[in-house]
Length: 488
Image (tube, rainbow, N blue to C red; front, top):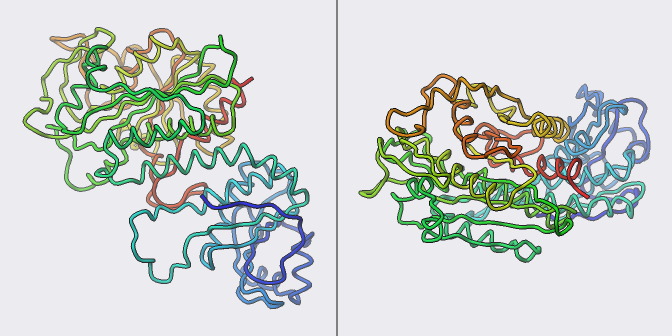
């Protein structure tokens, strides 16, 4: 993660910088710099028909006075300026600076100090790159941003506001790193090792191996894992920042480190993307890192089921019946509907052991949710209006938006098996809903929400908060929800 520093609003004398400005008459550092370069900034903005709309940019090359590049970044209407707009401006500034070198200055003298910290968060999110396996720079690549200074009216206040946000930024980047890893580099045992590193933040980490899960009756999860030679894991993370007797909040993640589809094998085209089928688990890990990193005043539990869904002579067969940790039996009609089997055992275990205030699970669960909602929103399914409301409201504020889907009892009838309690698929109609209804069978009466992030965990083009690739979806959402409704 790049280094962020804060300084007063005095302008540097040369180099590359980005200036945040709202529509209207030039003000602050923008006005001063425009005078210094003989009006080159206003002339460039006028020529480009740049209106200073939120998160829009105008790049001015060699404007004079020793500057090689100035990136004008719009803030939009002043009365609409909030944390989300500030973050998006930071993302835009980072993208404008990244073409020019590894360091830069972002001038945010016209926003409040708290919002300057959110600009810094956007800079980190927008400058993220996953270059772990590159041995040579890309042609014309200036290299990743490593140092950015945010110049603002009150750098001390902004720096203080940045401290908890920097923990969130690290959580998002950790999530993106995990999702970006090739499947051969992040099999369940290696994923476990990455999670163990959270102990440095004060997170307690416990690991259930195959034998431990067998004793607990994790027949559904182990059935998915049996085709791979990589041993499965269930990893439990605990952050104890609240009162000793406070029930924890709980987050559960699907961690299928590669999903071939098993015997019900997926088509070859696009199968490489199935390295991202652990994005739900990655979001849980990132959220736990964020909460611990900012010393959240809450008790939180994160539980992830880590498996590979592979083919072999020992792979699960369509038509097999497994017994879950809850004691219910499931007829596995499609081995590519494996995520719900992993989550069934992990959800049951989480609610049974930890008695949480609520559970939120995240999973790249169904292609059907992408058909329904595209890539703009994740699907929200819940048995609790209060929890669903908290998640939805927070999603609108953070830009990680959700859309609540129906959970009518009639959908459960599509999952009745002829020879077992349930079957793991209910047919094509309402596929994301029947998947959610399957999960609901393993949560008891705990307030619970399922986020189907199949469309939002990875993007083929840059978004307002993420570059192309892994988005880190869910970390900012869950951290902000905890801070707003459940902390302290």
